[in-house]
Structures are given as C-alpha cells and as structure tokens.
Amino acid sequence: MKINVDWDRCTGMGMCESLAPDVFEVDDDGSLIVHAEEVPEGMESDVREAVAACPTEALSLEGE
Amino acid sequence: MTHLVVVGASLAGLRAVEAVRRDGFDGEVTLVGAEEHLPYDRPPLSKEYLSAEECPDPRYREEETFAGDLDVELVLGTPASELDTTARTVTVGERTLSYDGLVIATGAHARALPGTEGIEGVHTVRTLDDAIALRAALRGGARRLTVVGAGFIGSEVAAVGRTLGLEVTILEALETPLARAVGERMGRALTHLHRRHGTEVRTGVAVEEVLAENGRVTGVRLGDGSRVDSDVLVVGIGARPATDWLEGSGLTIDDGVVADETLAAAPGVYVAGDIARWPNALFSDVAGGTMRLEHWTSAADQGGRAARHAVDPSSAKPYETVPYFWSDWYDGRVQFVGIAAGDHVEVVAGDDAEGGPFTAIYRAGDRIVGALAVDMPAEVMKYRRLIGGRKTWDDALELAEQRRQQREAKKAQQGAST
Image 1 (tube, rainbow over the protein chains, first blue to last red):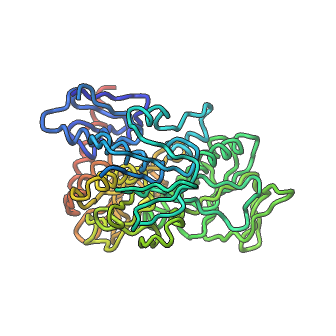
Image 2 (tube, rainbow over the protein chains, first blue to last red):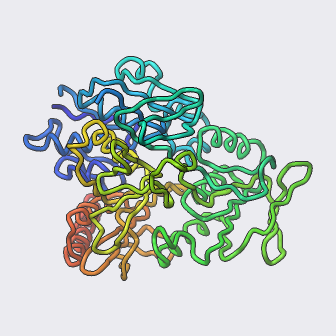
Image 3 (cartoon, each protein chain N blue to C red):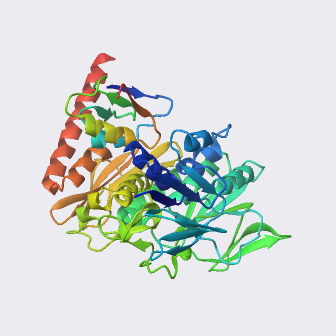
C-alpha cells in the first residue's frame, strides 16, 4: 500500500503523527515528513486510522 | 439490522454513514440534516472562509457520492422533531422514519445575545449561512468589529478582522479568557497573542445593551456605562447542544445527551459529536464523571464509532480518546491535546510571557494530562501519545528534554551549514 499526501491540503495538524509516529512526523516548521512511501508491514491499521483522522483529508492510500 | 438512521448531517453524521458502508453494511442508510446544505467542513468558516479572496467550497462530498458510492438517502432541509425509542421511530417533517439502529449527531446551536434578533450587523458563526453573511459584512466596508466572547471562535473571527484591516475589540465577561479550556495562566498567555496583533481585549466586562439605529447595530453599552462603537458585532459566547427535539424521548438530557462508555444512550441509540456526553475512561482517575467535546476530531471519531455500534451493538466497545483541538489566530496556530484539568502547568519550550511560541504541559496527580502549543506545530502530537498511554509526569519531562536537545542540535546544524 502506497501513502499519498495531497500537499495542497496538508496543514501539518499532526493527527497522523499521533496515531502512526513511525510513518508521519510534523517538522518544527509545521511541514509533514513522511518516513515511508509504502505502509510498513504490521502498521496497516495505524496508518489507516491516521488517514481517516486527517482533518483536511490530505492523506490517502493507494492499492488497498 | 436493516435500517440505520443518522440524525445530523455534519461531520459526525457523514463519518457515521461512511464508516458502516466501508465496513460493508448493506442495509438501508438514511442521513437527516436540518440544513439544506450537503455536509460541509465547519472549521474554516471562522477562519479562511471569511478572509480568503476566493471562497473555497466547504462541502465534503458531492451529492452524487451519497446516491452512488455510499447508497445513502439524504433527507435535508427539515430538522427531526421527535424520537420514539419504544416504537423506534424518528419524525422528520411529515415523515416517520423507522430505525433498527440510530445515531444522534444533531450538534449544537450558537448562543445568541438576548434581544438582538433582527438587528442588522449582529452575527453568530456556526452554519455556512452564518459564515456567508459574516463574510459579506466584514468585507463590505465595515471599519470596526466588536467580538463578544474571547473563546476560540470569537478569537478566530477577531484575528480575521485584523487581517482584513478592521479595528477590533474583544469583550469578555471573565477576567481571564479561555480559563476553562486551557487554564488561567495559559488563558493569559493566549490573550497576549491578540494584543500583539493590535486587537483590544477587555476582560471582566458585561455587555448591558446592544445599540442600534434604524435596525442596524451601532455598538454596545457596557456595565460601567461606557460604549464601544461598532459596525459589525460578532457574538461568540458558546454553543448549546441541539437537544430540544429530544424532550420527552426518555433519553437523559443534561447539557447534551448522556450516554454510557460505548456512546449508547438507549437500546440501539448511539450519540456522536457536540451533543454526546459520555464517560471518557482515559481520564476517569483525574477528572471523574462525563465529558462533552465540541471538537472536530471527536465528532469525526465518535461518528464512526457510534454508527458501528448502532449496526452491531454486540461489537460495542468503550470509547476513550485524548481530546484535540486547534485554532488559527493571525498567522499562528494554537493546538491543545488532552484536558486542562490538573494542578500544575509547566512551560517546557519557548516563553509564554509574550504569547509564544511556546509549549506547556499539564499535570494531574502523577500523570501528564494535557499539552498546549502556540506556533510550535511539531510538539503537541508527541505528548498526545504519552497522554493516551497514561504515561507519568516524569516521562513527559523526559520527552521535553529530548525535544529540547533535538531542537538545539538542529539549530547548531543549521548554523554550521550557513
């Protein structure tokens, strides 16, 4: 599964980081860092929750 | 289970119908909304929707998505008027909808100032129609904006007013704005943010009378007799859960609909969003009783949970969460996670004296229970995990120290590379 970010929508709120911190991290300037292009094994459910929790619907998964 | 009815077509209601369809629920689904509008995104309505040159479309989904992919019947434009939990029916206008499972997510209404109905130039901000009217007023040549209530909505509108070049005054009845939401000291820190941007904040003042000439607002008269002239008056004094239609339904109404830890208010009836009052077990040791949240995050989360429980009550699990909200003021962002209860607040990064940037954490007993950040977007979510994991105060201090070192190392690195 590939993680897609709509950078026009992302405002660095960080919900994703609180649910899947190994994959998502908000940088000091508020920009989002995605540590993995593909969802790492064993983290599928955390990442799915993170995608669903995004207040700006900036995250999506490809190839589910 | 054959028919899920969701009353309330905002975020929680939308997430409710989407969650069960994603799970493969193949029964009938009906979504009832009081407003004519399709479900739309509320947070921008007190922020960029008012200030942006081009009005963004706030709707979450197109109409075809409901009829097509989601296979949801929309009943929009008429509020539900009655619930019968014995017959399992909801009355909407002339229609009576029978349900097997019900989600109630009717949200809240903005509180108005008594006696201001029909006065032109007096606004609340809750619905899309409210925002359309306020946007026109703020951009239609107004010079002076007065905001009654220094809460988050009022503060956001004040910030928009300044951004648009208006003279802005905030009037707050309490001595410290936002004391209930973030505590006394942090309430004062946030007030500095306004003053730094040229917004006048007057605390401990009572609005005696709204003044109008020819049906148009001209200002307000305060308890001490003084007056504040104004072209636009925004009332941001909180919201009242939309539970009037549930009187006589047998549900327990007490500043919201009271539910159990699984969000159940009656057999087959679950609640979500601003109206839901439930025991959040995560904080039962430090803040007993029930809580009711008016945050985007909890509405989204509870909507999905409530609907899943409604279509399959045997799967219902206790719902616990670390509350989260954000608020955009001027060019900065205020973020809060957890609860502001507790006996100690410590600023662990930056300086709160001038309104930030800073990060503060909240202690209750031996736990970290909350974190507030102003213009430090990388911080609060790291603490959110600690709060959710019931971690100790020492764990939180350790993280704070780690973060301090990381920020310094980064600064040194940036210094070295330039």
